[in-house]
Image (cartoon, rainbow, N blue to C red; front, side, top):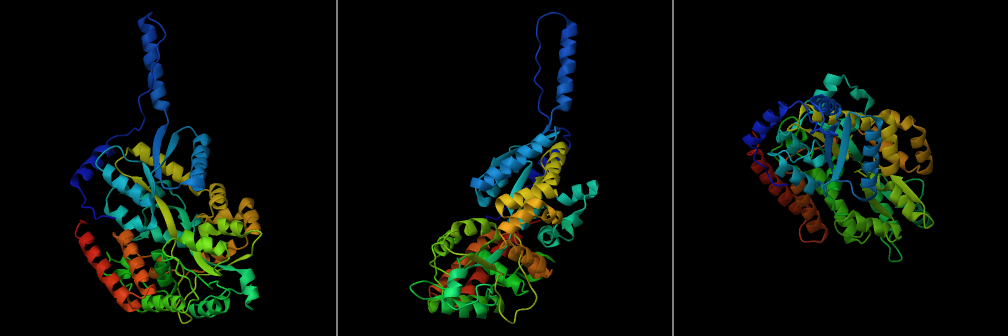
Length: 463
C-alpha cells in the first residue's frame, strides 16, 4: 500500500456531500398525449411520487471472486427482494489491493462506492483516510445490540472502544493433517500436535518414502498469527492500538524462536519449502505428498472435499511453543466500511444492508456456503449450521480456537498503515532464512528495520 497524503479536497467534498439528503436519481416521466394542462399536472405529480418512492441505490465494492462472488450475489439478491427502500448493487473490483487502490483514486470524486469491503490489514489506512463514517454512529443511533456478535471478531475492528467497520468474512489459520499418514507412522490420528516441539517430532516420524512431514507456505499472515498465539505483540504501542505504532517487533524473541523452529525442519528435510502460495501447499497436501500444513479455516470444506476417497483429514489448533503464554488467533478476512462522501440516504441504506448481513439466518447461510465464521452468535443455533457441523466436524477445531482465544492486545491484532508492504517484507525475511541466505535473527532484524522506516514515512502523512 502506498502512503497517501490526506487531501483537504477530500474533506471539502465530504462536507459538500453531507448536505445532500437524497440518493434518489431522476424519475422517468412518461406523458401520453398532447391534450391539456391537467395531464401535464398529473404527469408532474406522478413523477414526484415516483421520485419520492424510488429506492436508494447503494454501490458495494467487493473482492469476492468465483464461488465466493456467487455467494455475495445471492446475499445481495435476497436483501433486495426483502424490502423496497434500498437496492444494493455489488461490483467486483479485483483483489483487496486493487479495490483499495481504486477507492483511493475515487476519494475526490463521486465515482466511488457507498460501501467497500477492505481486508483487515487495511484498517489503519481506512481510519486515517478520514473517508469513512464509523459504523459506531449507526450502531448508537439505531441502538443496535453489538453483544449479539462474536467478541473476538469485533475486537479487531474496534479502536478506542469504537467500531469503525462491520466484520464480514472472517477466518483463522488451523493445522490440517493426514490421519492415514499419522496412523501409518505410529502416531495417534485423533491427537494432533499442538506445540512447535510436537510438530517437529511428528514431522520427523512422518517424513519417509519421499514424503514430507509438513509444509507451511511462506505467508506473512502465519507469522502474525504465531506472535498472537504466544501472547506477544507484533508492533510497539500496544500493537499500534494505544497509540500509532512506530516500531516493528518482528525480530524479537518470539519471531526468532518461530523462524528458527521453521528453518530447522526445512534443514533436516522434515518440512518442504514450497514457496509463498498456500495453493501450492494445499495441492501437495491433497496429493498426499505432505502430512501436515497450515491453511485458513475458510479452506476447510475445499480441503475435506478434495481429500474425499483418498484419506481422512484431521484438524488441530495453530501450534505454539510449549512455554508460550496465553494467546490465541487474530481474525483474518475483511470488513465493510461506509464511505462518508455519499449522501446520508446512501449511508443509511448501506447500514440497512449491513444489518441484514448480521442476522443469524444470513450468517448461517454465508458460513455454510463459504466456510467463513458466522459473526453472529445465534447463527450456531440454526439447523443449517448444525447439519454442516455434523458433515464437517473438523470445523469444531476452528470454532473452539476462536472462542478459546484470550483477549489482549496481541490477539486483538496489530494495526499499521503500511501493513500490506510489511507483510511482503516479512515474507522475504522468512524466505531468506529458509533458503540459508541469512540467519533467522539477521533476516528478521533487516525486516524490522525496513518496516519501522516505512511506518515512520507513513506516519508523517497522517494529520
